[in-house]
Image (cartoon, rainbow, N blue to C red; front, side, top):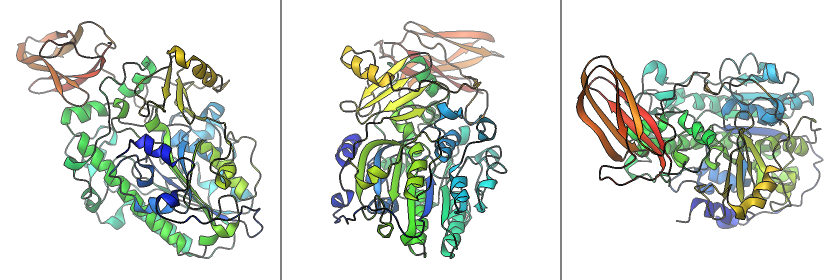
Length: 577
């Protein structure tokens, strides 16, 4: 099978219907003269490119999204503004990038930061549209949901509670549920799942005749963690048979300090390595994507059977991507490809005679952003676009997917950390001035940082000049989790080192201690202590960066597990080459 990035490149600027054995329909784009079109604005949380037509994973099972692609414009280089739920959704719903709004993380509420901003739904409402919202549209917490957003909607179903909460009910996979890192099948009928209830509500609303055009925002919570889905979807992906992402163990060696600090904030990498569950986690993510696709199919079929099918523009998007081991990361919250790249489909019915009408199956490889959706929808629906919008209408690309578009996609993670993505390059600059540059033509998995290579000096300078000239300043605590607000207790001994590393541990009483060094994939490389007795107090062992055979190990991230009969701790050690 071709490499995933090669697969995507081969799709850019083509007609997907041809690739699927379908004859593309054609329609001349013309100004819309009929009734105002409806909008179904449909988000799927935390889904990356593991979708059949995107080729992100060879075992992805998404027949409904694949079917949607056959009658839509699919954007293969679409990117989020922020790789985190709340700020990404604020950027999408206001058209304002975070450097313009100051909404960088989940700690920053839009009500206080940008109280006068015009929101997408409210803009449509003020121009005569009925507004509806079902499920996760904005962020789903009490602080950022009701009562903050209820004024936007004529009808709203807030996301139902989890059918199973690992923090309250215990994990389903039998392991400690770190930050919701759990998966399995809750003991509940499918009809009780939150996303199923959301789609039921949406289907009921779509089946009803409406006297005004509508802006209908619908949002699925899955495949967001925890990865819960009915058993039939897990049965599609036996863990022993899943294909794991291709990674290298020294991937972070050429990444600046801020970049790999984004990785070390979270403990899921250690969790996966310690318990040997990489294949189980990948299978669970695939299963939850298949479940989300099933719910998407229910919703799209309901629209097709409704009286609104021929007059409703459909946009399907995600708020950000997700890493499953790539760059040794198990999160979003980073500026690399897997965290920032999203699926994006825009379907314009042929009867509307608008840009993109009747051009099902076409693919655009231009670099676009979520903030482009606000001006796109106002453009298609004949509404004025607020001056606050940082994005650009995608209507020219709906009419011609290869239209000129000399505009990189910008993603931002926390204050003054930016990434620019062109059709060939990804450039990252952190707030301390350190940089990453990846050439996707030769390095599609972003393994080699060439920011300091003289052959790329002109490219680096050209991209740097396109970064934001000003970032709205807000107070951000680097030791607070930007998603949950929790204080992060990092145990990294030491970071980084090119010589012997001293691993410290405190014992309250004499006991036997085992100290083992693993790669991030769980392969043991060095036994530093094997049940050795230690006296009480502060104790240490040293590691010289070699394996059990005495060979020097390559630079990269390693995990040191310290165990006693009663305790277990995992620490990170980054070796410099």
